[in-house]
Amino acid sequence: HWRKIKLEQLKQLILDCGGIFIEAASESNSINPNENFKVNIEAINRGKSTVVLKSIKNSEGKILWDKTEALPFNDDKKNEITLNSGKHNPAYSSPYWLNEKGTVGMYVAPDDLIGLPETPPLEQLTFELQFGNTTIPFTKSIIYKFNDPVKGEVYRPFEVLPEVTASIPEKVLIFANDEAKNVSIIVRAGKDGVSGNVSLQHPDGWKVEPAQQVFQLERNGETETFNFTVTPPKGQSKGYLKTLVTAEGKVFDKELVVIDYEHIPYQSVLLPSEAKVVKINIQKKGQNIGYINGAGDAIPESLKQIGYSVTTIDPTAISEEKLKNFDAIVVGIRAYNTVPELAFVQPILNKYVENGGTLIVQYNTSHRLVTEDIAPYLLKLSRDRVTDEFSEVKMLAPENPLLNTPNKINEKDFEGWVQERGLYFPNEWAKEFTPILGMKDKGEAQTKGALLMAKYGKGYYIYTGLSFFRELPAGVPGAYRLFANMLSIGK
View 1 (tube, rainbow, N blue to C red):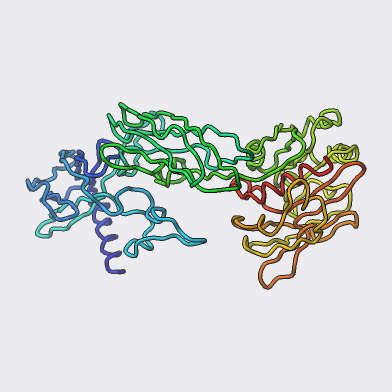
View 2 (tube, rainbow, N blue to C red):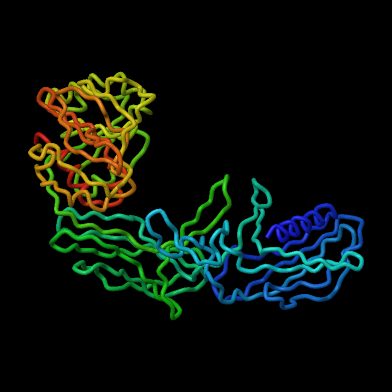
């Protein structure tokens, strides 16, 4: 193992010290499986030593070029060869550990690829260079490069991608009633002149119209959007919509995700083209919700999916007059860590509750709070958390409205949660607070601060460390039902 590594390092040292540059660059950034493509070969000897390029071979050892030419000093030798992508395993350039569905905390990967930092390149060329009487093989992966007007010469991986991909922009679709929704599918060409049809696979009991639609895309990278009408079943149900694209006698079911940031290598990722659909038996009271953003979450979008009207509130513009028209105010995650203005408007929020409003505060970390007075009564945060998303949840106040109105909450509502139950639970609170739920990790003491409710004046103050910011975007039915109860309290 180490011998192989050191030999490769020595060979690179020979190139560097000898001033020798060799490269194999494709004319395009990606191709399709079993497609011919052109590669530009370049070799430059910037040193004074005599170097002879004897041959160029592919990864199977086939000779592609064997003219045996000396490389004159600083003379740019260029050649063009044609290759075929053939059939490789994995077939595409996507990260190999994402090709199959994994388990909790574990990827699934072929045994021969485990431990590799990236998917093996499509093709590597071996340049045989002769130094005196010694011939040394140098292996180079085929790359793609282009000139950017600002950055100059930019290198990218040379990739193998499908002829066509499709994506559903909304990854989770929540149906709070029997009404149908429009679902968009974006079909993207991976080559010039591709046509076919696109359809949606759906769970039993769901309906999708039309059954399929026809597309025709003329240019590589061109996209077209298609709308399908999806109707949920009568009862509670969940599953996945999956796109199926038929073109050129093949079926494609992948979505192309491009990762392109300055600080990491460019890469294309192929994922299953699907969206989660959830029909929830849910009741709700109230309609107009005000939302104060914190560190960032997707709660507003999730609440809109079940029919709420959500308005983002600028914390610098909070006043009693502006708050009085909202049925409830929700404070985003870590807002009391990241929004300094809350230290000054907390009395206004408390007054809103006193006058009959509902204020729901989501989790904050226990340090670096902009104010210690995050509630109308004593409330101290801790580092208590429950990381096991499968942990048992006990109803500490089974008769409390949060567990009964308008949705009856039971243990089944805590099934299917993702990543964790919650974090930074309070561990000390005033007697006015009622702890609603008890939970714990294995071997730990039971926590009671995951969900606290207090009556204040005519309204209600609720603090929750439950990870709704994870559960709602993931389409967890029970999390939606419990959050609807929180918003409905006192209505």
